Every structure is written in C-alpha cells, then in structure tokens.
Amino acid sequence: MEPLFDKNAPKKPTNLSVNSDLLKKSKAININLSAALEQALKDKLAQDQAEKWADNNKNAIKAYNNFVDEHGCFGDEYREF
Image (cartoon, rainbow, N blue to C red; front, side, top):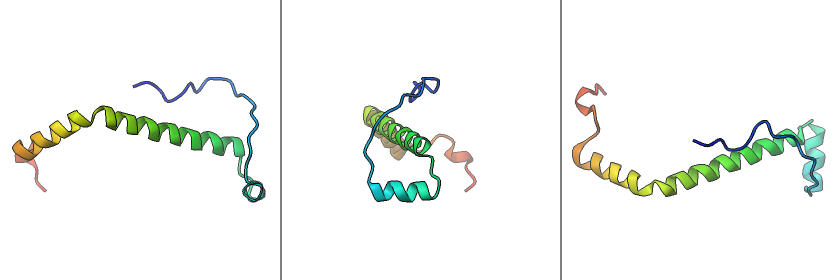
C-alpha cells in the first residue's frame, strides 16, 4: 500500500485563516497549531483513502459476504465460541 504522504518532505510555511476565538483558546492551552493541523490532515487523508479502498473493493466485499452467507466462514468447524 502506498503511504499517505512523504514523511521526509520539508516543512513549508503557509498562511491560513482561523476563527479568532478558537485560535485564542488553543494558544491559551498551548496547543501546537502546526502539529494539530498536520494530525488533522493525516486523519482526513487516511479517512479518504479508506473510503476509496472500500468503494474500489465493494464488489469483492459483497461477493465474499455472499460466499460466507452461503458456505460459512473458513474454520467455523474449529471455532469454540
């Protein structure tokens, strides 16, 4: 699987607009804005990638689920729960 992004890419300064009250309250509790934004962007990228994967594989997932419904899951006879 391809990585979400290049973790070794250099940092790039950027300008953005943030709600002033949100910014003030974040600074008051010493939130690292760069780190918080990077984490939020990573989470969004991961969510987007997961949704695309599920969409690209929906036919295979449906076929597998139909197979399991009809034939059961591999190893069912050994399950003890």
